[in-house]
Amino acid sequence: MKSGGFGLLLVGAWFAVSHQLIASELLFLLPLALIVGVMLDYILRLMAEERAYGIAMLSIVFYIALIFSIAVPFSEQRSAKDLWEMLTAENVQEVGLYGTYPTSAVFYSSSKIVMLMHEREVAGYVPKDFSWTGKNVMPYAILERNPYRIVVVTPKSYDRFIAQQNKKWQVIDADGSWIMLRMKKG
Image (cartoon, rainbow, N blue to C red; front, side, top):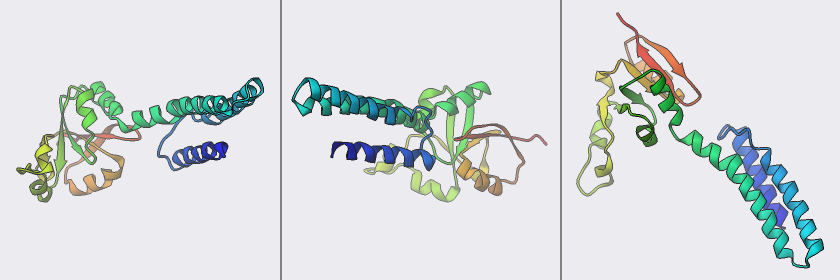
């Protein structure tokens, strides 16, 4: 019964990696932890008649492996640390961002990150009294009047951004989560 739950967690981890929700080099820790945990469970059952010790050890070993193989890489992937590294490498002071706006990027970098949105979206974004939109504190600019020579876009929004801009853009840096573009001169 107890191994069925851990087996289900292993299947969930495999699903997350195979569908590129996370990419973890440490995923091998999960089956290894399950094997070590089962061995500890067996040894503890031989030494003591209590099954609770074995179940506890199996759970501890597996969940520690789960933290390092799934939770930590997933947290790093969802943060904007890699965006900070791109902005720092290019020494960008202020940048327009089109697509998903990660608030963690503001905390990592010293750059001013301005969300680019369509003019039709601004009315829904402007803070209103007694509403959750009163919490909209990120700076924004209108995409149609984009004042930025450097723009960061997500891979999903890249084609849409390029199609809407009549200016020429060149890729200056990219990774799996972000594409940094510079407006071509002339």
